[in-house]
Image (cartoon, rainbow, N blue to C red; front, top):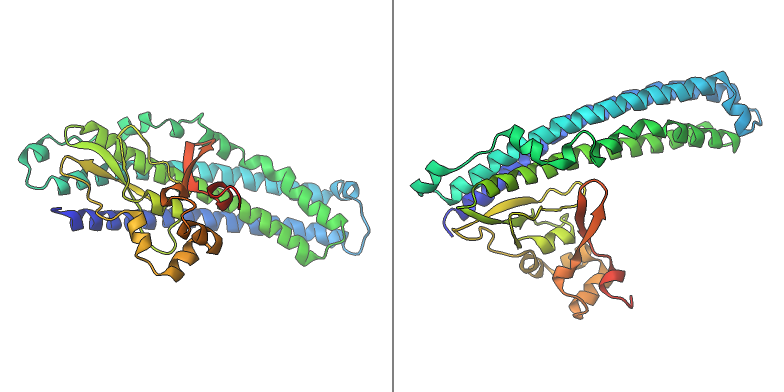
Length: 330
């Protein structure tokens, strides 16, 4: 197909550029979480100094001034992280919309290269118009309600630390409780912001395709195929979909929707074809021994490796199908 290399090359370049901008924003979030952790750690150390060598109940610990100071600090930091997560999520979602609509236009232009009728009549939707169409970015959406719940975890984190003290754990073990809890908060914030950006990018692309229905009749699921690609995305790669169907990739999923135009499908090789071309060792590494053996024995079709699950934020998402659901007797 003409211009196929150009489309796939553009997709790879745009994806890399989006990841660089994403990484810069998330690095800012990580630094903020790190600084907040150090401030909480200072309060925790003061509490540990006060409780050192004493056999205390959880109630006795929670009545200490040092505990109340630590709890207040955790609350302050989580409220700040909540606000920052909200701001960065909005920033990345706006970035996703803008790049999604522009990238979609470029894909269409490449595929329609030389078609004067197409190039002069192509419609690019304004960023604001697309944003109003994306319900998951509304202020009262489950996405932002989830972010608003970050600060509610303060008592939970403090309680875990107090339990460690009451159980007689040493300072290193108690510090690890804080590290683990704070790390989970950071991971959750980063996942939320990144996934909002990626969904916004794909939905902006889809809105652009819909606005150019005279040229675009659907979209194609496109994944970067390598050993790290999840099997759900591998199985979906190259599949064709109607414009009114969202690309429902999983959390942190980086697949993109390429236009299915009147000029044909720019993806010439399906995910299954690509997978079958890999060595048996690589196939086993990606699938796992038991799942690979079941597939080789014909106990399930390759396409069954992707399943749709409900999601409270985005409605539904595609994830890998576990072996127990692929083969009922396993």
